[in-house]
Image (cartoon, rainbow, N blue to C red):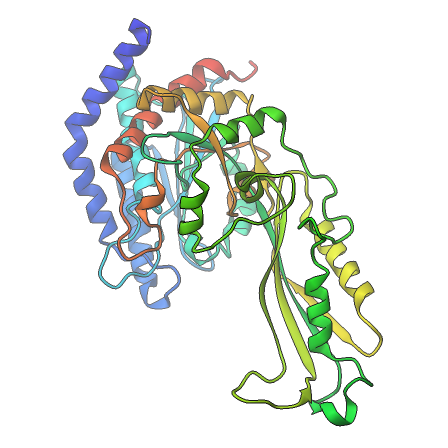
Length: 452
């Protein structure tokens, strides 16, 4: 490190250490609020959590702090202008609602801890630089329904798009590879889910009297499932791969650099063999390739013993994970056409799609991503590697509505046990998150100037 950078790192760490105890006391107080959005009885607690955070953001120094009501749980918005017309505007996203827990506080890692580290981070940034306002125009949007599927989030973002306008979005609801391998996530997959219901006879009928002479919905749903993939485990729906952004050689190299232990991964997955699309590694399959999975299938008699019928109906629930370049509406249309063309006469069908989530991907050479990597590198003092996330989330809504790249800044590790009874956060990593946040705003302002 240069002398200037080294001095800045030292100043940030000194400030953090001076305020460490108070920060942890505040976080513990927030964690005690059972803001469980999925349980109506906790609606007052979710509101109390939002009010608590709003008060702390005001105490931190944000001049504008508001609690935004939705048809469900409230979100918290805060804004702190830099005073510099060329400074970029950055929106930090997270959530303050938590999963149910009988005996333990939730949110240490998912996601109150990772939201709250930004409050100490921005104060350390100010103290180390002598500024009275952040080097960037800083905004926060902390929603209250993420653990319930964010049912009102898209509408909120669309309604408040002008207030939320930003040059980049920082999502602090994610994690790292491990305690000793700091990583930055560069993308999340999208998702399209559907249920296909098949209808044959108007009621269950005798398989001896009618079997082999009329179509069987249970048989046909099995045929659909069997036709979903080809012999190379590729999705066989025509048009499914249209637009897919393929991995570059460099991205594949970066994935391969990670210390991935497939046997350990299989134990975590409670599975006995890796399997998937031919020509791709396990990490490539779960992070950067689109997939189709059968989530549930049923039809006909399910009880003990036998009941020799042709069932009147059957169903299958499917989910499609999507990657950059795929359009959920196009995929939905392709699935509808595929299913209709495979069903024989005498089988009616209905397909119901849930609201889709788009994929998001940040190019490796994006200047804002490089700032995240440098800021994390200063905090951890070791190389920062790259991952992606196989799951899906509301980050894509922010990217699509606001037209801003999404950056992921998280310090949680797999052992933190999100949604488990013993959810935790490693304190050393939590304060590395504080450090990263403190370094990020100045780096962005120095290297990513807006046109005058």
